[in-house]
Image (tube, rainbow, N blue to C red):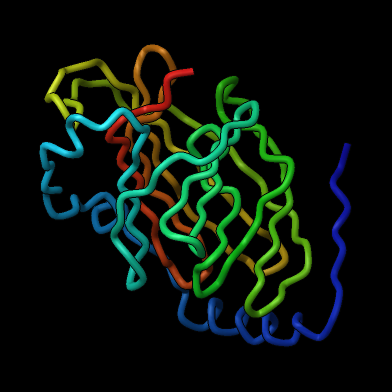
Length: 209
């Protein structure tokens, strides 16, 4: 079933300007720059001994913070920092933000467990974009070994590449997810707006269901 595109309000004028900017500048992010490692995280004894699920989340030019888990519903987890910053994650992907400079929401995201192509809708808050179709496809990039941040335990991982495309504003890009043999995602790097802003999530302690 095709998802219906609903465009409301005068916010689309701003997005038409954005389309022009994207076309003229051909904004594309190289994989090399996107996969650049962040600065090492200082793991304190308090973090190591904590009983709570934690993720280290970075968003370009906005914050680098440890988030705690506040709610779990089916495949969706809500992570928070303070009273006004929330990141909602569905199967490792950021599907909603509250408290960023340009919050957004993705509806009907189905994930990549089956590696099937899929379709969802995305909506930006500032400026308001209205609901836009977004398309996803997936491929396995490579396999290898990596270590958990807290205890340096080594495990096998698969690196999954998610390619996305929003036809209305000609926005496309790629996201990356590092998953273990239990399909738990330990790290991800995602582009979260048409200007190339990136979010990086590193799991410190996963949720124990």
